[in-house]
Image (cartoon, rainbow, N blue to C red):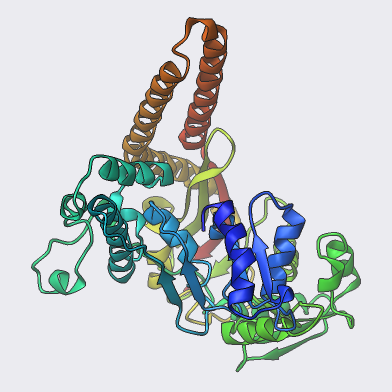
Length: 493
């Protein structure tokens, strides 16, 4: 529910009506301390906890996971925003839910024609939410404003104006996509906000994170001692923490996470991880014994740093690929980065700069380069023969020059794509600022409040100016790319 008074009413009557003890019911609302809120959420997700019913305000609609032991949700009141629908339902209808979510909406019935018409509009919101989830997966795309306050205002205006359900529905006609009509060619492919997101795999020389970690550890073992075990079937690595790793993670990992025997078990199998999470919820410690093997695991970050440290400052490997490249072909693999004014990367590319017989040939995408050479798919033997790097050094300045020119073109392309979006964002801010001004005029109509009005206007100006500066600093780039040599590929006889 969105009202605290309603929450208190339910807290008072539901336990008695459902024959529940007070220990079986918990409440969650915004004025509780963060610690108390977190404790309620954690207790609700533990099997040993007596809590069976959670009554919450809309503070529980964002940022918390309630799906571990619960798959039932009841909307005691109906939100006026489809985005709130999505946020509320997402507490139990999310990744890791093992049961089919069961979501109910309590809708009041009235014989009063006016109220009945208003409730029909809210019922229509329920239908639109279900329709959007089935078809496009994003209810917020229905109204197209992507703002809770604006969605509530649209609904409120429809109710205030006495709009019928059919009139209200016309505003959203054609907004959702019928997959069958799309497949049969009866509907044009969706574009813009209605288009489904496209995903792609990150390019890598390894099939997955497990195989990368295994190769990295085997490489490190050539020069140092590491106690590890590998299970290829389970994609699992067992690693005993070294003195260096203990020192590094001493202050970054909570004490309860650290394994008692100093042995870390990492698995890339998500089913194993989900099982561990469920198992740990039955344990008072509430921490899995097996941890997820992914790039942001602190143990893997430590391995990454040790692998990178294998090359000195301003050093890069030179790989001989006989048969994959022409005998007189040299390819510089480079990364280029262009940050925004805050130093955050906005344009980041990996690519190859190819030379043939010491003459620049082309810029090649990293994808195409891997496909052409077979790097990562084909094992190239290390002949042990030395490579004369002097000819490569002579090509280096031109390679960097070509890389900078390429990144400048990529920046220009990025600017073309982002400028229109940036201008729309700035226009929307000006529109919102104008609405704030109009509200200010209505609120301070009396002349005696002029000083308060002016002070409030300055506050509005300052907030919008700061946000506009933030948007511009975030999306504005400088034509000064950072270029890094990743590796050099050399053709052989």
